[in-house]
Image (cartoon, rainbow, N blue to C red; front, side):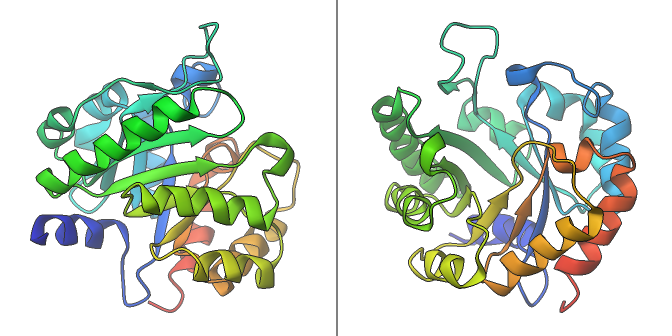
Length: 251
């Protein structure tokens, strides 16, 4: 438990125990698209911008480790969606806890996308992964995404998050329903910290994005894990600085 607590403290920071996670684990799914096509450069921008953690796969981690510095946490993606495969909508386990330990990861992450098929196998995998994480003192972030037709429904979000907690996760990454009051109930029904997924890049004003972040924090979320909406921006470093100011304003 002390090891897990230490690692969690590197992810959830300050008196408010909040986080600004930059996911860059999209490569196996959508390829080397602009924004993550130069891993070293976007990692340097993440460091300068104040991201508290990177969510990345093993290959990405090995390449950028020296650029991350001592303060940035590493959340290692141990399951992926293979975008070129016929089963491109399903997650596949690809890395072990031993790999995470060797890379000095602060947490591991795996996903269940409900409604795409393969959920039963991934639930079994997530439960087994949680047991292994307990033995290693390794936090587990479970990305729990409701079915596409319910992805922003509060009840479905709460249900998905609850499954993640019941399977043994330490943090849950899921969608935001767009309503502070409704999402506060999601947070209250989930006994572990909730981090908000960003979803696809949007044609949105920066202030609208920042207001969304303010809303999720008001609802009780621990922070955000925005990938495409950050590294797909015209100036990711500047956007990260503004996000950092909002998220850690009370710390």
